[in-house]
Length: 265
Ligand code: THG
Image (cartoon, protein in one colour):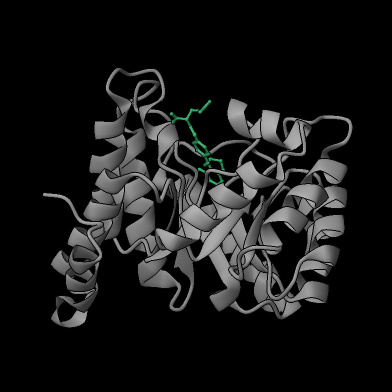
């Protein structure tokens, strides 16, 4: 499982404050802890700063890159901010995220090529947010056509089906699960990922819904996830579920995680 650590996000109050105050120690600590806990990428987001997002994001990236070696998932909706971030990133960056909206996609494809970046491709286009698995698969087909034409390898692409709250419509969880399975059937070599927290929006005891949904996504072949790697419950479920879908030969990763004390019963 490719783990993208989600904690360095300015939508979280303490992170926003730390960025604002240029609290180097707070940021370095949160970066190191997530990598020690197993994160392969660290998401970095300064989107809460509307007027000076780029300046804050570049400070955040510099600070993080000074203490950890893992690549960053540059989490911004603004192509200009993404370009500035790619220019200062060390190694092969990930862009989080792009959509299939025509104008935005045309702006971002040259950047993906120039920097040979990995990219999270969110299942959304000019017709808006998807409801059904079929809506999502249509967007995925669009991405596949563009990426193939432009020479962007599907191995660098992480398809995100776009998770919506089951409190809004009780079919929204299952539609994502069906989409994940079908994406994995149709497009060999592509990665799939998602954030979990939207699934439980508007309901009490959100964590149990996030956890159950995560295990189901793993069962449908999802091979990456955007999570809090410091949450022992979700990390335990990660190692356990990979054993159970035969993605952990001889249970080696599970046993190693148990020895490191990161699996709880
Ligand atoms: N797909 C993609 N990117 C994403 C998401 C996704 N980026 C944002 C989000 N979803 C994933 N990242 C986070 C980061 C932090 C938190 C949740 C998701 C978080 N939430 C607190 C909680 O759940 O308790 C509440 C916020 C707070 O602390 O104030 O910390 O789906 N491609």
